[in-house]
Image 1: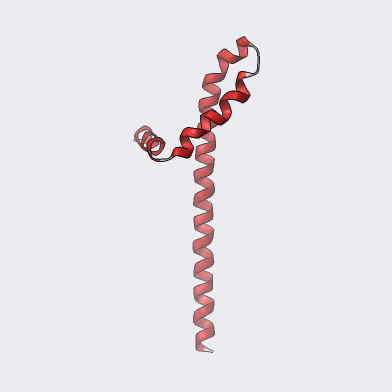
Image 2: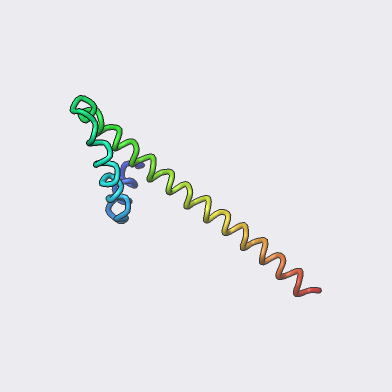
Amino acid sequence: MLIAKSTRRKKNHKKDCELPLLFGPSLEQPSSPTAAETPPTTVKTTKMTITSVMMKMKKKKKKKKQKNKKSKIKNKKNKHK
């Protein structure tokens, strides 16, 4: 189930596809033995960044909802005064 969701996300969002390009050149600079080890690490870093970005987005949405709730309550109180 999780794998299917991640593939859908990659198709829909262009930003997710651009992430490996950002990490690629920085990891190609070291010598050949380390370059052979880099592909699995690049996959891990991109996945981590995608998940962290998604978590940040969720937190922002949650904060925004809470702010809206507070402001609605304040508005109601001010109307009755």
